Length: 247
Image (cartoon, rainbow, N blue to C red; front, side, top):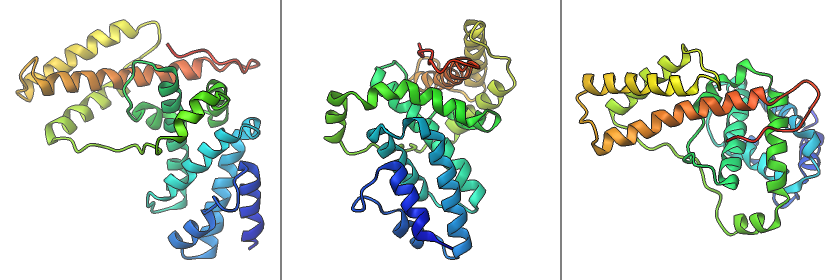
């Protein structure tokens, strides 16, 4: 197994210097058998080639590399789990970067619906569309200068109370069975509010309280993230690579 050439291929594609490239050490630490290491490397190689049309945008490739490293830091039980998690992390990361850069109103939160739904979609066109949205950001030197002064923010999950988890789980399942489109989003938002208020009564949460308002914002963001996903998928046309802005 020619690990050296595989690592060289990845490093060259991403334009990562030898000094900054720690993928070989990290994989050696995390995985025992050579066959497993090679499977992981094959998945990484397949993943980076999703970004082929952006390979000349070095800050973008740095972000792709960071995504690979942070995904490796999350222990997985199988190669298939790693592949799935890598794509999920990438999509969440790049959409979040676009949200931050564009100063949209959504909170900094993992796009759960994007994670749940990505495997049903064609990953390559989704990544191309996201990449086209992000490319101007990675070419904005003022933004990049600001970003280098701040340590990379890591997505963290706050510990939720048992009630919060139950409510979000119920809302999650409810949203999955709804027919949601960009045209009926107002109606769905109204129905979601009614569903939430029913749950609030069942779980004896005081309407208007801090926890009530916090959960309301978060479940509405769940819907917002699903609508963002729909917007991304609908913006991919057969011939054009021009992205449709997320409102």
